Length: 316
Image (cartoon, rainbow, N blue to C red; front, side):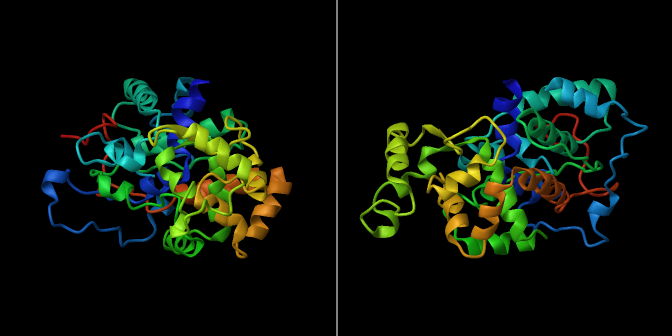
């Protein structure tokens, strides 16, 4: 189950997708003190992406990625980077992405970005876990900076639906994308520290979160004796891409507060119920929403970002 443990839980959880979407193309950290990070102001960079981008320069790219196993700022590895942030503790698969990048560099040197590799790997991992296939548009460049504080400011699992909708709207995504992409939690894990506030004295009440099933609550307490322990996001079928995530919400078995709120909020609950009862609707829309997410705030062209030779470091 190498793909499952190394890639899917690494790149497909919702918070990682948003982390990757927030990076900017700038000099390394020691060169950007007190300088604001800027976004491109020309026509949408996503317009430059194409499924045929590597048709001539690296025609076997997808086969290489599939055989081995968005700006990739999460891959940069140095003190203060997103990769070392507390919010990234559950992320896995860095070594596998490094292996893929090394093979791609051997066959197509200085041609394919880590961002594109990460995006394609997420798609292939989805398929491996039983999810849908979609065509990945390529042509992204890698960001030149990664800041731990950005990983710590993305959703942590206790926000309200309004704040999540506001965030998605700023990214050019909508309410359907929010509910559908949250379904990526059908695979993956969370640290117990992210959910222990639900066990007792929830919101200062002195009692557990009333929106969580009693038996499920007791099960989580047993699994989370230490805050550093991990627990599956989907307590029913944690290694299968399916609609159990949504049926769990109907049973008050959402692991994160934000998960369960999707079913209790009147704006999102009808979408949850529709996806829970229509597996084909979920898989088809998931592919659509992933393509949209993969096009958020990308960097392309000759002046935006770079093509890293090693995904862990910016080019010197």
